[in-house]
Length: 145
Image 1 (cartoon, rainbow, N blue to C red):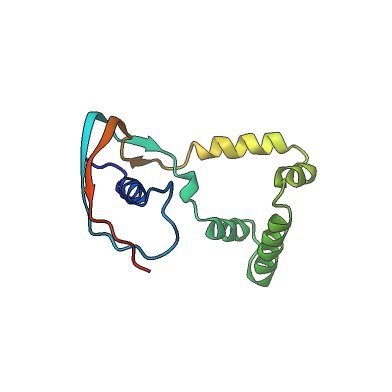
Image 2 (cartoon, one colour):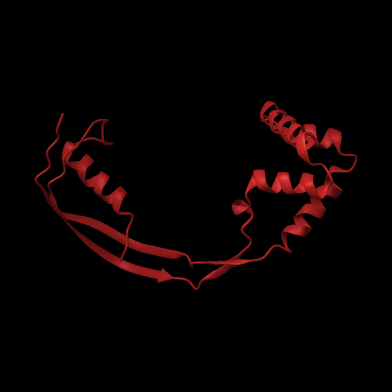
């Protein structure tokens, strides 16, 4: 069974230090930790998803410009201007976009509908832990530095 090992180890070390969190520095670990884990683990079936977060932004923008017939220096300049504007408008970009598009909501609906046409991928099903972890024994912690 896989539990969040870094979190468990950090908690065990912090427990040894009698602190809420591990302080900055190099910490040598030479410890034996025994845990009692009881409960259930449920692994769901793999599930399809639309990988919108995996769409590479810059290549997508470059391809959009090319498909719109904007190439060469004009495309580079337009891309640079758009990136600068997006960084400047980072606080509330929706407001700037809404003011520039005559029908923002119609454009947004078209984009959302198009996302449904993207190829799906499979991701591992979620693993749900309903367990309690009880420390049985921890010994031998050393802090170096």
